[in-house]
Amino acid sequence: MSSFKIKSFEEYEQAYQKSVEAPEEFWGEIASTFRWQKKWDKVLEWNFTDPDVKWFVGGKTNITENCLDRHLEKNANTLAYIWEPNNPNDATVKYTYRELHEKVCRFANVLKKHGAKKGDRICIYMPMIPELAIAVLACARIGAVHSVVFGGFSAHSIADRIQDAQCSMVITADGGVRGNKEIPLKSVMDDALELCPSVKKVIVLTKTKTPVYMLRNRDFWWDEELQTVGADCPAEPMDAEDILFILYTSGSTGKPKGVLHTVGGYMVFAQYTFENVFQYEQPEIFFCTADIGWITGHSYIVYGPLLSGATSVLFEGIPTFPDAGRFWDIVQKHRVTTLYTAPTAIRSLMAAGLKYVNGKDLSSLKKLGSVGEPINEEAWHWYHDNIGKGNCPIVDTWWQTETGGILISAIAGITPLKPGFASLPLPGIQPCLVDEKGDVIEGNGVSGNLCIKFPWPGIIRTTYGDHERCRTTYFSTYKNMYFTGDGCMRDEDGYYRITGRVDDVINVSGHRIGTAEVENAINMHTGVVESAVVGFPHDIKGQGIYAYVITEKAPSDENLMRQDILMTVSRIIGPIAKPDKIQFVSGLPKTRSGKIMRRILRKVAEGDIANLGDTSTLLDPTVVDAIKAGAIKSS
Ligand code: WT7
Image 1 (tube, rainbow, N blue to C red):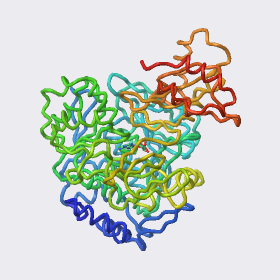
Image 2: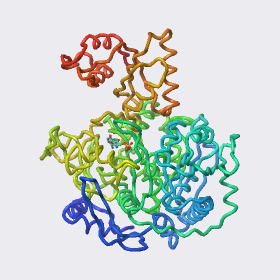
Image 3: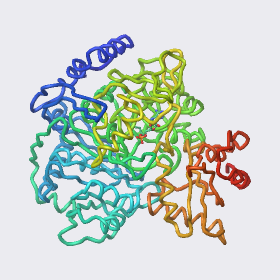
Image 4: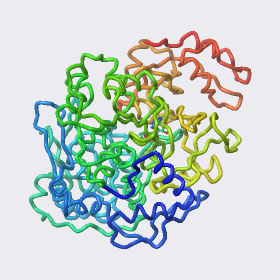
């Protein structure tokens, strides 16, 4: 157990106070518990103007030494991963820390053999199998920058990400399975690679035995390459501020941006937050249901748990295959103690009914977690009562791709809970609420835009290749503050409740989708003149996507054209960005300066057409009546 584990509410308050009064001492002590090749000269240098944030300046380490080598002395035979396959009848695979260490070192040697060096960007596009974690760690071992792309993204999205980062290598698999669906990963990647001349080498894992195209001198089989290398791979010495990874995420404008995290700060923050929020202790079994393609998987399937020497379940499949009892089967089978999942999953399993829960032995569960979007009270109580049997604390963890780890959350079993509240900031986190004018709102019982006024070790360093975009997106709205993009209320007890995005980002099933991105995809469809996309409340997904589309001429078959547009969006972004509703309109509500009044479109999408507010500034107020008349009701 590490010395920084908070064990009581009093200790939380003390740690919090110290983190504010003496942040460098606070984080320096925590960082001292890690393995460093060279100690840092200075804990923190920062300004939020450029912005320029550096943690553990001058320190040298390698995160994989802390994830793997560090545990070999005493805990080599502890399980790192229990892999649960998509098909419950297939065999579970288990890896100890020793085995994982060896696999990572060997695969790192494969990367080296193919010319990968420190600083090179490597795109990883793989299913949820142990080899995905191995590929991620192998990159970190040699100092290459990983850019994991979620297996559900289209060739077009992959190409955008590979080009933006100028990746020189790709690691993928022939295919992947999720539920009943097979995803031809290599084939999708081949389409992407047509547009990516920077990629010189592709390593392909055999998984589904799907026939694939293998180009001589570019494409190599994972298994064959492993035969040609040794098991010894010293960890590359990394500066604390060297790049660890890039992960693309959507914003309110333009293409997804590459959020960049660095080695030292991210490492310290991932372990600190994992151990404290979940109060992890061996031999607990931690099960985070996210995909490693998202930040939740990076921080709480790969780095946080491994840094802590924890045992995690890595699940290949989906919550509803072969039926809606799958999570509960996994909890029972592997005696899971901590389940960390998303409200959207809870709502869909709740809708499936208790018949999938009843009869399952969930007695191993001690702690529950929620992440990705606000959790509504109904889902909170269902989770608490039926899964936690009233005995398990639920930590509602608020954070973002940009924050690297959890910022606001209860500490399991320590912080008193309130359903729907992320609750209190972790030590080191200084949230504040800001009004429209940029003034900080003091006191309790208030609402505003959520900002953070002091850096923490896991904070975004830049957006890859475009520092100005990082500055304008996060550090220019409010002076000297990191702006989260979320609205938030702080109640009388100082508890935080996140109310959702205040920008043009939609949170669909816990995934961030930029409205501009979806609009751009729809606008690529033949016959489309213009479109506007907004979110609307959705029972299962949290938010759904509602698209208003202007066409050159009235579609002869509206339904077919809708299907076609969905195909286009799937091809351009991926199936997760497909609109739930498409309304064909003849005009959009625009101001005299040509700006679309999204507020009105949101109201119509919500079905709240009686309260559209002031429409007098519209260029043509009559378009609103036409839009109201054609609104698609909830299905
Ligand atoms: C956005 C970040 C990092 C977690 C996975 C999503 C929303 C996240 C919560 C929560 C209310 C939440 C916010 C945030 N969000 N967690 N517990 N309660 N909202 O990461 O894709 O970077 O999205 O997800 O709106 O800004 P992401």
